[in-house]
Length: 596
Image (cartoon, rainbow, N blue to C red; front, side, top):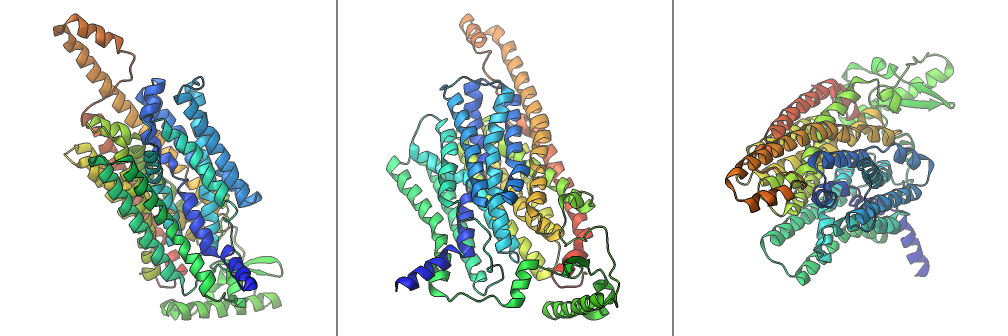
């Protein structure tokens, strides 16, 4: 009995689903940058910043959240647990120091130093992201859409989860949220960092995978629905502290439920012995026509496969087509070894093969993907970073509600983006970016609602922008791995994420903040003109409050910004459709159908 349990526990700790579940929990710490909309008002008041200064902090935060080259490098040369620990230390130092400054426990720093501080703190998230995605994409190479969508979804939901934990503290000091952001990730990473790793021999599709992913999707929907319900109840009803504690405990139970999958698989099913041919697939990746093969230690590119294969092969069913191409590859390999065939060599890989970052940077498809992401996610991040000021300008006092709601819609967008884009590529062999074009059109409507400022527009705009923004981060990583390979996925992914802060720098740091401060100055000037008819006491009060940060009120504060963002999203959708047109043949080859 003891030997049996020891064996089963061994299967459990080496189960790829355990890695996936632990990565889901870690990813809740990889989206804390989305809470900037909740902490920016207290930073603004405590340090007496104007909107442009807050926007600069927001851009520094976005850069920290997206510039992950160091994280990608360390994940390649260090064990993943060590890279995760580095990220946790950065997060603790950055946000911990910020908390000390905001609560006046230490001296304030100049704005440029504050930008470095928040960059360092948020940059810790890139380690969590990279380690989780790299390990799980390698463990599930044939289920990239669901894996990336679910993991990135939990990153998007992290803000709502932390907000609920913050509600348990019941602190009137809003700076306590910064303390939770500093301490929470360190505790989670230390508890789980040794679980996150690629698991050898378990990378192939299993019959149980479909049911397991369906179970996880169900938990995700329950989690999002529960959090949304809790946020609405806490917003409209005066909930007691004991009730908040109970609601948070239920939240933790829902988060823990997915651990049932690796427990069930490890203790009820016999482990499968990986056949020799599956082991080869595991080592070489998801090989297709035109992919790299190795013979006698030297790389040979079979570009002849496309020329030598019979004309009707592309019309065959997927399994039969792959079998015919595999046989052709074997014959070409034997002929090349005997000197009967002279294999053509190309300077670089084809789309669908493994690219280095340098090779990808000279491809038009890579830059189409980058700028489509820059316009789409950049406009969405502008809303997320300014959501506190947007809701305040329209008269909403509780800004945390909208920050939590957009976190939930962000989560569902990532889950849905991964799920529906997987249907597009698996069932129709159609480019995944078609789903991204749809998401960007949805975002355009969301920005339009923000511009109009109609009653309830904040709720509708938050829903549409959150869903569309989230879908980007399920679709782009999966598409990048399909077009440019898994070998250098960490470097490729972290370069693409630069589009996020680049878009935020232009749209939030330059456009949104400038328009907001201009409108706030106009309102302040009009208010001062109106003081001529007031008494001396009112004049003195206004004079004493001149050093307070300028506040803009009304729809006008973000009207022009939101219209610009709406137009930008339409441009992003056009770029995505151009990429769809260019990559139809690639996806047809990858997923075994002839392009239409």
